[in-house]
Length: 248
Image (cartoon, rainbow, N blue to C red; front, side, top):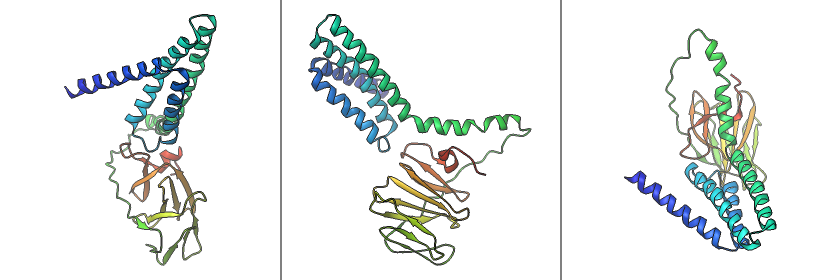
């Protein structure tokens, strides 16, 4: 019963949205569509997948209603229909490009997982099953000295973090510095995120490699490796899957 109620509610809101854009002058409906596009692009890392789906559906139906409003303004003649057909071609092409851009991370992760299947199909014995249990990060405020699990102290300030052995992790220039930092359980990895939580910096101290990931959050450690997610309701992914390759 709840599912039917939710479906009817979405259908009602969609109908009201279509009527609103169809009855409004085209020069008022266009800013509403552009505002939805801006929200999808600028807030894609903060919106849940369900909310992004609602925005894409509103853009598809809203564009059709806006074209009707444009036809009503220009008139039911050759010029009016020509403008509507041209607008439909350009508008839905841009919407298809927007959908592809918003889903780029899902395709990248799926391609990284699918790349291993040919090797698994040729293997005589399949990989052993393993339950992945993530250990939560032990974050600390990055405004003072942090104890290094491998000895010494790490000095963190507005410009970054300085290790006792000379290693330095600089904060992104566009941010106000790191807000919190932490280590993996054995101290191999160092992680720090900015105050706006939009930039995550990971440093593999064993291999001397650094990764700056925008829009990703560290959710835990497994076998001394970081696992990340974009939103709280997404499935965590290993760093190798996020980068699109496997070094080990």
